[in-house]
Length: 95
Image (cartoon, rainbow, N blue to C red; front, side):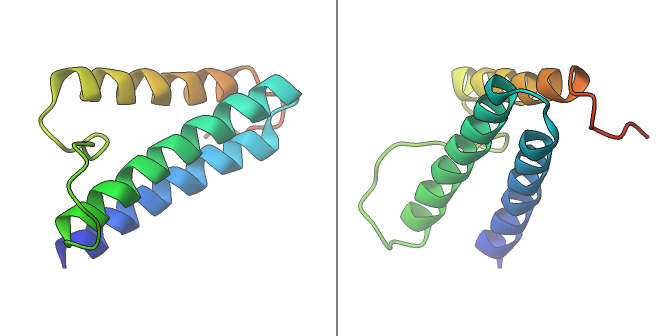
């Protein structure tokens, strides 16, 4: 149950990053937002696979959830990059 919820939250974050990537007006913005979305997704999928004993232990933390100081800071910085792409994209709707 916990891995499903975690995968669901991660899916929302991934969809958000790729939505911003598609709406960005530049190739650089698309590359940045897509790379951040993909890296956070892969990190979460590896962590969930380790937690469910599908693969051997790797040591990757779950983005935004695991209690790692430097991991949390790097995840927040990555989300900040996506927010910056959204801020400077003309097509992103602001609510």
